[in-house]
Image 1 (tube, rainbow, N blue to C red):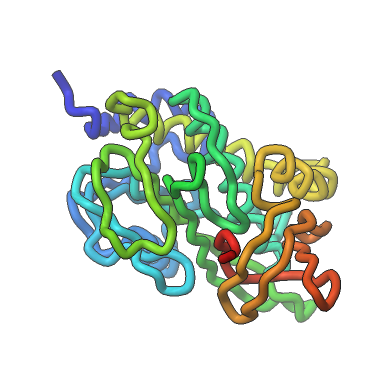
Image 2: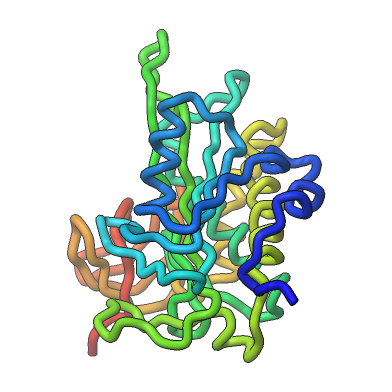
Length: 277
C-alpha cells in the first residue's frame, strides 16, 4: 500500500494534461525553501509551469519573513513558477491579484478533496473555523519595459498546506490545524496537489483571457462570498500600519477597506488578527 504522501510523477502528468504543469514536477526529499529554489530557477530560465515540491523544508518562509513550519512528510509544500505571456504582460501593480487568485484556487481544491468549508483571511491565509491550515507567499522578478512600465518577468507562488500534522508549535500567532485533523482521515498529498494545480491553472489562465478585465474585477466579490474576514469583522492589522477597525470589503484593486475611528481607510499590505477585546 502506498503512503498517502507518495507522489507518482507519471500519474501526475496524466492528471495535469492540458495544463502548463503536466511535466513540470521537481521533487525534493528535503530543501531549505521551495520558494528560494524556484526563484533561483527562474533566474536560470526555468519555464513557466515548473513546480517544486518538497517532503520537508528546513527554512520554509511565509509573509514578512515569518517561518513556515514544514515538518517532514506532514504537509504539501510547493512553489509554482509562473511567467506571464509576452502578449499579456503583467504590470507589477497587478501583483496583488496573484495571492488572491491562489487563495481562491486553494480554497476550491481543499473543499473539493475534503468536503470541508475553508475560510479566506485576506490577503493570504486559509483557515478552517479559526485555525490556519494553509498560507501563500508570492515573490516576483520584475523588468522595465521600453515604455517605462515595470512588469513581472516571473512570479513564484508558494503554497503550504498542513496535511498530516497532529500537533503544532505552541507559539504560533494563529492556532493551526491540518486537513487530516479536520477530516478525521488521511488525505492523499497527490490528490490535493492535482486539485490545487488544476484550480490554479484555471485562475492564472484568466490573465491571458479576452475577459481578463472582467475576471479581475470579479475577484473582490468572489472572495467576499466565501470569506468571513473581509466584511463586518473587527480586526487588528499588523504590518507597516498598525490599526484596529471593522472590515468593510475589498476595493476594486483587491485591497482591504477598514472602518476605523478616523474613518474609512485602505490597507494595502499587512496581516489580520481577530481584534483583542
